[in-house]
Length: 449
Image 1: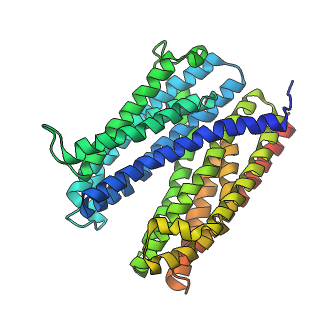
Image 2 (image 1 turned 135 degrees about the vertical axis):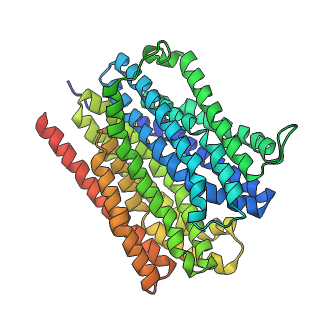
Image 3 (image 1 turned 90 degrees about the vertical axis):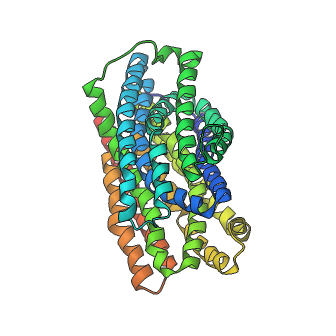
């Protein structure tokens, strides 16, 4: 019989999951920040080479690791249905899928340097950026398999091991970068390319550490995945890909629209581009708050979805959206009150700072819609609805936001602000459509029961 638990209990469960996940997200962002800082100290050329390399690596990494997010709702559903044997099977099959996808991603990154001349990357940057891509590509199987194990652990309600490993990775990356960037013993000085080797090695260390912890910890013994070998199961492989591929593509559509915004603005001058990058960096960091809440919502809703407890599932959705609203208002207030202080961290240029102050107003304007749309997407993933959100994301960002942004920035009189208007419109459309889809899914499940 379905039971409805208290609001206090559900909020406690959401924040128990959300806070470690949020720390993990910030720690993973810190890895890129460490690379940027250390490459900048090495030379401007190496910093530029990393920027080019990351521009190609990041979409590939997010697409393939995004596919493995399917592990989370599948394990959460099986956990809610109290089927530990099924959980172990899902986790093992996810590792198979992650292993295959990881090597495909590695191959793509080995070929990616061939695109550098076609993209107009200066010849002086091509060798270092190319070597960076070759090196970091060998870490992709570890990235995807780590994502699978992370989804398994978090879906069972254990996000802290992933958080601890992510924090330790911040400490380990610095000496690894020093060794490969500046050389040690027989290892030559590799500069920015050394960051690629260091990151790849770090990804393997993170995967091995999490795998060892899962194999030894008593918390995972009832669903232990390393007790026996299991061949590839075509049913589970198909199900993971059918659920995960739309998630990966939706993330790709969203990330790519934000990354291409700088390209749209680039003809408008260095000052506008620099100001845009500052505003985008600020909002990207703050986006981790609603994104972490969305992951927690996926886990809690996935668990109730497995129990077929629709009333409790709707309660979690309601609390999640209320929490997202409060967090969005907190974020908006923080950005409004501390805009000068935030921007001063990034630049001392008066002209850039003034434009960035102006653009942050647009970032403030879309915080609420952004929080609602990512929360709705997290709820839908927990209900294993991923195809619809993928098409909604593509429509909102590439069919609507991109043309609107290009029109207002290039052909209107708004300049860089035009791109941000496009983003606001796209996020608003995504928000409305995702909430409507969530409502329709709830109605369908209520009627079926």
